[in-house]
Length: 101
Image 1: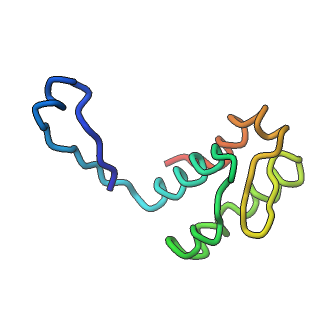
Image 2: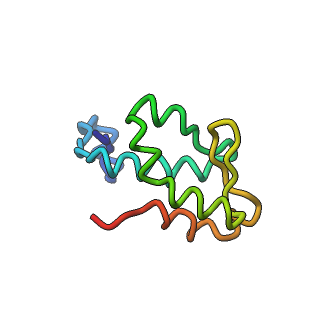
């Protein structure tokens, strides 16, 4: 579940309730990859396995392997990070983890 506040400042200050959006597990995992790789520390694959199961990592194994072999990602001790080159081409990296619905 994703929570959001209103875009209207008056409503926000008046205490408008949060809106809830149900997010599928597939979309949640995609967001983890997309957002986690934006961080300097990268993405903790061990934490993803603990939260969502091994399939959440294995389903992206081909992308991880291809992007690592291409020098765009590095995998070290369970952490997946963008390389310097990967940062320059980050949109290409991120799109590799987004699947069609």
